[in-house]
Length: 157
Image 1: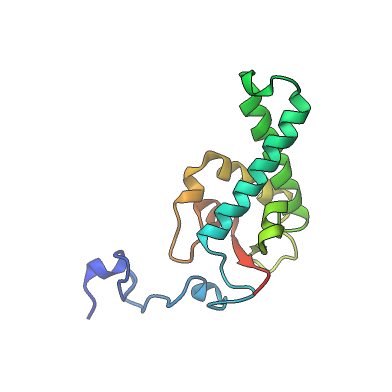
Image 2: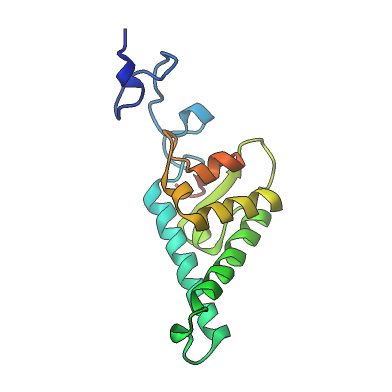
């Protein structure tokens, strides 16, 4: 019989209900352990976010113009550009430019073909807050993915 503490300690063998814990991220969601359609790891997701953020910086700097870095509103311009660069392609295609470059995409858990506008907007807004994206569950999904019933998966092996 498992101890109660095993349900929340890393490497614990039992979940709160006494069931055996999943062996790999995404197993509870019916996803493979590795390869295409497996859960994208945190490092790859962070790298994709970084690429999108750098693209937003460049675009915002061009739009704002000379002396952009000295303007107090430049950070808001970057955030606005990043929001659009992320939310629109995720809603329509399931992936932003950074995600596509790194071979990952956002997949809805309800079997829908695309994430859709409401979920993409909510997901992107929660990522902008930062904390929901950092707090993750045993499947590697952040609170933003749990709130929108999505998972980030790999598209390449």
